[in-house]
Image (cartoon, rainbow, N blue to C red):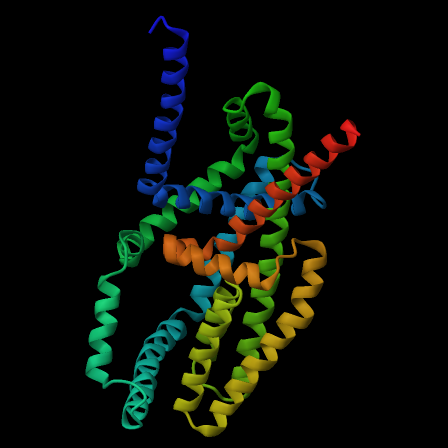
Amino acid sequence: MRDPAMRAEFARASVWFGLAIAIALVVVLIQPILIILAGLVVAALLDGGVRLLGRVLPIGRGWRLLIVVLAVIAFLLGTFYLTGVQLVEQVTQLRATVQGQSQKVVEWLSSKGVMPGAADLNGAFHQALDSVGKITSYVGTALGVLTTLVFILVLGLFFAMEPRIYERGLQWMVPRDSREEFTVTTQRMATTLRRLLAGRLTGMAAEGVLTWIALEVGGVPMALVLGIIAAIMAFIPNIGAFITGALMIAVGFSAGAHTGFWALATWAVVQSFDGYVVVPIVARRTVDLPPALTLSMQILASALFGILGLALADPMTAMIKVALERRSERQGEKDGETA
């Protein structure tokens, strides 16, 4: 090892060996990494509320965070208190209705020779579920979902309480000559993430309320739970809209042709209003992600990381976009200095 050439080769091999170990660790620990990323998303939501509250209440950050957390808890508890029994009944009814409508569609398609029989289809469906990777199976159980949500909320709360501590900790892990650039990039990522989530929350609220009111007016059963599902699915653009539409149409036609067409028209009108009015207005103040890029990332993230990856596809895409834009901007500054 006294030979300089040998030491250089050993250092080069160590780099490649360390890179291989890092990739293996990312593959093995992808679920905890996604949970941490989801915690950062929750922290960005809370931080956005704290900053917004700071415009009208000139008090300490800790008190503003407490007010935001208490307001969220009060909203959730109040919603379940006022609609808890009705919501549980509608969820149970929704499951039975969707199963019945799906069975009718499968039987009709089977009679036309378009699809295999219902028994074969159910067998293929169960076989497909059994073949899903361990990441999806981890969050697929009720206990896994509950544990994951608790970890995400706790991490988000801790991140939001003292974000500067964690920001400085990340900076210490970066070489000294790159810390300034790293700080600028992470600050832009945080700002973009807050704006993206603010836009998502605005779209979720608008879509959920409009769906609930329109379905209630049209006499579609389970309007409340369908409105809540529409609001939740609005967090995942493109894919969430198709899921919401399928549920609304299935429930609508279960009560008759008139309500079915009303549900179809409601879905089309609400999605058009959200896509052509709400989204463009919000996009002016938030990050503008191309629809094809968003859908492609959602497909890739869901295939690689499961349900949690699908939910976090947009935030990951936005942060990657910010990093690439900052890199291009920095390269342009270097080229300008060279010229």
